[in-house]
Amino acid sequence: MKLRNHLAILVLGGFMMAALPAMSQTEQWVEQQKEVIKMRKTMAKMTRKQVESNVWKETKRQVRAWKKEGWKSSPGTPSLEQQLNDALMAQYELEGTFPRFIIGRGSGYGSTFGTARKQAVARARTDVAACIQTEVTELIEASESNVELSHSDVETVGKVLTSSRQFVEQSLGRTQVVFEAFREKDGKTEVMVNVSCDGRSARSTVLKAFEKESGELQEKLSKLMGE
Image 1 (cartoon, rainbow, N blue to C red):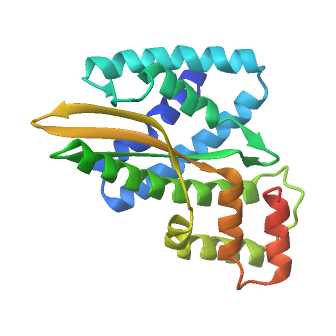
Image 2 (cartoon, one colour):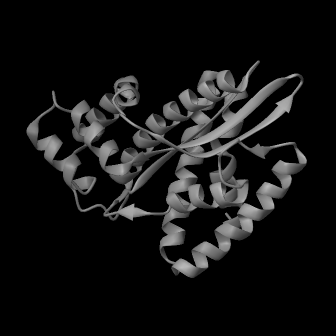
């Protein structure tokens, strides 16, 4: 997939999810997040200057399209270009084998700005939880992983991650809104946001979900995620 297409996925990902049924949202989000991870690996091979150049070009292109659709930066926030550029750049930062930041995306629609924003942030936090699950799953499946997990381990991890999604979401702690835009549509307000969760906090939350599992499995996961 071309670099520009990868970046478009990172930009648009969760914003289009709000209108989809729950099951479709989950399936499409997983595939899109896998593309995010692939893109991160591609970007890791580039210089910082090359990454910044590619991201800024896509940022300007995307923001031009959004402005034509009526999107504006929310009151008190930086320009759409600056916000989007910063949010995209944050997705490429790694801390060991795990992302330094987990970015969730969501949108909301309501009679007031506050109502729409609250809905968007809630959906973005849900996206963060989904993203964390995908990140861990992809780490396990990565061929370069030096952590030996048995077939039974892999099955257990998958089951625990799936069953603990709500726990992970509720245990995330503080998330920061790093991108926020709005527009008026059909007499109502639509808001889209990106929220950021600290990667260390995400790793800690995942490990808490495995406290009832064997100490050996917890140790393997900790090593896998660079703890």
